[in-house]
Image 1 (cartoon, rainbow, N blue to C red):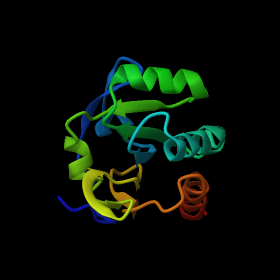
Image 2: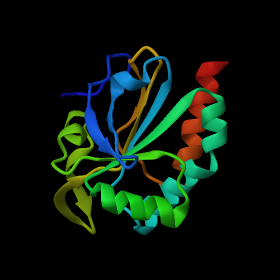
Image 3: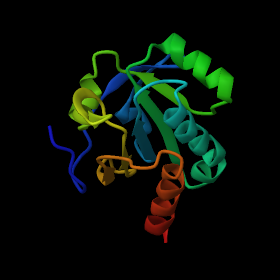
Image 4: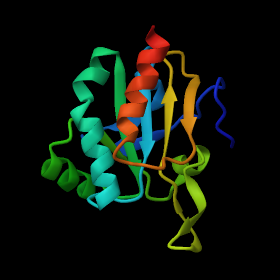
Length: 157
């Protein structure tokens, strides 16, 4: 399935780090920042998660919810959240089904070799369930959360 700006976001239902199942429909009326990342507690993924953590109050003030998605288990997510004091839910997609729907799993270049895996990407979904922005490939994990906040600010004004 292709993820296109202006189109309805694909539905999902995944286990969350809070012990609940989370579906896109649960967040109707809110802006959802759905960010896909390769692995808990790795350098780039930690920088990105901590960036979203540091902006969490600003995002919440704009009626935005952050959800991180990786193939890691809920138990791995729990350790990652505790270690870095992350204030948002991380979702577990072990078979990469949701990632595939969102174009966040597939062929990518790693150390000059083509491999199949998680593609660091982000989808911002509006309160109406439509995709506002799709970053198909996030180049700088540490700077990305600020770009997301800038986007949300630009659509609010």
